[in-house]
Every structure is written in C-alpha cells, then in structure tokens.
Length: 409
Image 1 (cartoon, one colour):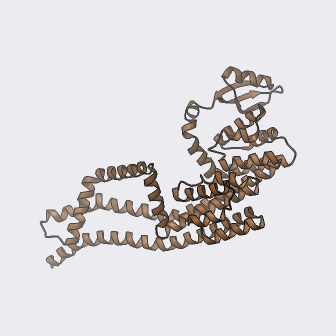
Image 2 (cartoon, one colour; image 1 turned 30 degrees about the vertical axis):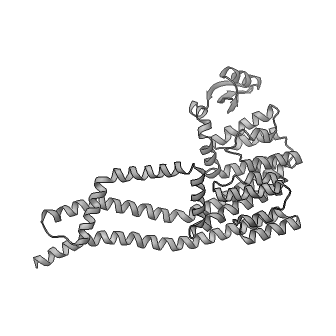
Image 3 (cartoon, rainbow, N blue to C red; image 1 turned 60 degrees about the vertical axis):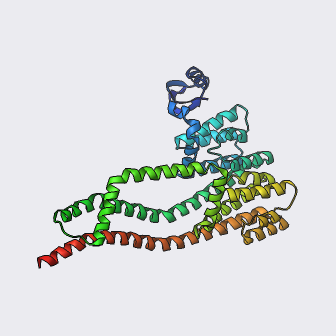
C-alpha cells in the first residue's frame, strides 16, 4: 500500500505532520478528513522507493540493523516498556513510530501499525518485512504472542540486536586499521610506479648510462603497470566476477568453504564466529519458548558456509527423528568439544538455553582476544612489507644518482 507524507490542520488549527498509507491520493485525503484533519499538503514518499522496495529491501534493512541499529533497539525497548505498562499493541506502536527518526524504519513501522489496526497480529505484520525482522525475531514474537509475554520477548529482541551490533562493531574496529594501512600503502606504491618513477627514470635514459639491475627491474615494472593497468584492472574484475559466479555451483562452494575453514589462523576464527552466533541465537530462541526443532530450523540459515550449514541440518534431522542432538554434533566434526559438553550438560539439567548463551559470550570474548592478537601481529608485518617495497623503489632510484656522482668526482 502506498505511503504518503502529510501536513494538516486539526480542528483547533494546530499543524500536524506525519505519514499515512492509502490505496490512492483521494483515499488518503478521505482518511485524513475522517481523522478530523484538514490536509494542506500530501506527497507520496517517492517512486524510487516504491519501485525498488524489493530490490533494495535487504540492503536497506542491513543499513537499519547496522548503522542505525541503536534506533531499532530503542524502538523494541520502547514497545516492550509500553506493553508492560498495559498499553495495547496498536497504541504502543503509534507512540513508538512518533519517536523514530530513521525515515525508512519509521515508514516500515507505520505500515506494521496500519496492519495491526486492520486486525492482523504483530507477528503477521512484521513478517512482511523480513529484511528488518529476521526469522529469528519472527519466531520469538510468535512464541511471545502465543504465551502472552510479548513485552518480555521484545526486550529480549532488543538485547539480541544490541549484543550482535556490539560484537560486529568490535570485529570491524579490530580490522579497520590494518585495512586502512594496506589501502594507503598500495595507493602510494601505485602512485610512485605510475607517476613518479617514469619521470625520474626518463632522466637516466636520456643520459645513455648503464643502469643497475634494481633500477632496470623498477623501470620494467613501472612501464608494465603504466601500459597495462587497464588490463590488470579488467583481469581482477573478471576474476572476482568469475569466482563469485563459480560459488553458485554447490560442489565448488562446498570445496571453497571447506578450504576456508582449514585455512591457518583465519579458518578457526571464522568457524568460532559462526558457532558463537549459532549458540547465541539458538539459546535466545529456546529462552523465549521456541521449541528446539523450530529453533534449529531457523538457525541453520544463519551462515552461507555450506559445511557448517550441512552440520546443523544433520543435527536438525536427528532431533526431528526424536534423537539426542549431542551425538550428531560429535559426528559432524565441526563443533568443538567444550560446546558439545556444554550442550550435553544443558540437556541433562534442562538449562540448554542459558548454557548456550553463556557459551556464546565466552566464545565472543575469545574471538575478540584472538583477533586483537592477530591484528597486533599483522600490523608490523604489513608495515614492514610496505616499507620493503617503498625502500626498493627509493634504492633503485638512488643507485644511478650515486653512480653519476662518483663519475663526476
């Protein structure tokens, strides 16, 4: 249903601004009049957004969850507070929408509010926005509505979003500096080879002097890059596109994912990040009343890594047959022994949800610590490597100059 931004006067002459959904502009005017408002302006939210909603939904949802995740968290917390205070869901949503500043999130929440006014449940209304409310959140909301604890569940949703955003920020901040150093270093080296070196070596070639080997190598590399930079760039783009296309083949994707998990240092870190997320989401689902089988069905899609996803699918299949999940966890060879032991203890004590969340917290702390150590090792190696390359360029340029100065003497 189209969404319109309006500016209107109420019966007391006060200006009111907001958004409203209607099938057409005429119906939007009629809807505002029925609310006791006299519109002075009514504008659609934009053709580009309406036409590109499906195509842009996932990316916009990602932006809302990452860069504007705090507002999403705040909205869920406010909803939970109002519901616990006895507000009905429609009034709670109406009050929450007014406080949202992110335009995209505000329009989506307003459409959810409109759906609830039409008689839909909150779980049914948010299912129209999977890019904002993941299958995990939808399952939690369904469980909360069926048990009458929606306010508690929404507080848990806010906690889950906040913890995921915090972990993501820690990972991003850890790798930001090495990436920055690498990008700047490569840019400086390319600039030297394409613009500085050709001008300096032009002087040497005009003097018809025999050049040292390092200088000849530098000139050859510089000429190659300056002449064939477009071919190198095109080859890199084609290689990246071909690699991405080959990943659509299941056999190739499985081999790449298996190799990635076995890659020294990085592979173990990637696996731990995925397993920490698996444990947190499954534990949160179980804590909020979602059955184990349903929870496993949801979390098997948390990663694109085929190896880990197939392992989770195998566990899900065994649980669906009424078997214990500990044995298939051991058989997959993916899950670490401490996690298997914690799951076994959780099943035996009836506190699987609490122990899974505890394991995820421990794993996230361990991942952060390991990543910090790796970055502290990578940074000096990266700087040293870039220094060696720049040093080679400087030496290759200075050698002919030194030789000429000796001849002058």
